[in-house]
Image 1 (spheres, one colour):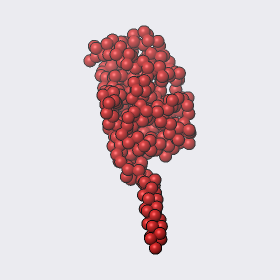
Image 2 (image 1 turned 90 degrees about the vertical axis):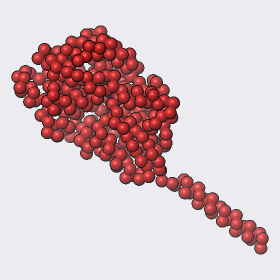
Image 3 (image 1 turned 135 degrees about the vertical axis):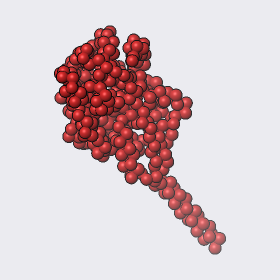
Image 4 (image 1 turned 180 degrees about the vertical axis):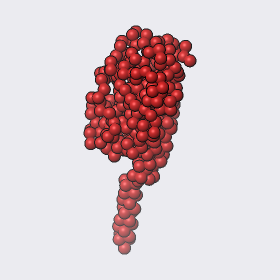
Length: 342
């Protein structure tokens, strides 16, 4: 009788243990993560909403920061990271973070559907959109000015554009750093800085955010905003009288990236979120939020209004070089250009 009771006790204990293991193994993901987002806030918000429908017990909070601001915050928090994911903005700033030891490599299963040119070869970041650098032009302002719209970098130096151009600050804006790195790669460093000294005479201000340049052009505060081309259809859809142009000499482009922060809180939840952002479904949310970048997932359908890469003259933009040279070029720009800014 004692042996029978012992056997029953053992069986019950095994059932309880197996039940506990099962509940752990199949537990729904839960917890909270913070992301630093460098792309359109509407796209970021919609992505979070849709992700949380799949994982209702995972809370995703995000803070909208330009590329330089996000990099500075990660540097300040390196001993105790607050964010788990850095999400959106040009990849060359991510390259600077990689070099500074701020990112953790993670190769998402979705990366298999993304071209090698849109991701870090060592898995430190993966791109989910592409944007071409160009000019956002206010048609009404140009009608009032009675001058031709610019179609080249050289055109921006015309004296009638004095105080009518906005470009963001490369130290805080990933967009503006792409401008700086593009000009250096296109012209050579000495010629590029001479060009920017001349351009400075026509720049009204250098805001912290790259998207501010296109927005100010849309509002008619200036004639020209140096921004990524996907800003044009977005502003036009909102009723602003804008058109776009790409510089004939050649222009750079951004790969909007996402990465896992080194030492991130809740890294497994962060990986789930990264997987969703990179997926076909995650990337296609952009158009629903009024964001019209080209998409990187081979099965994702880019927005119809997105401008294909072959419609602009692109330089062979070197993201690795741009990331490695970021701190030096920004410091040089501050010393030689921004010191006398208006």
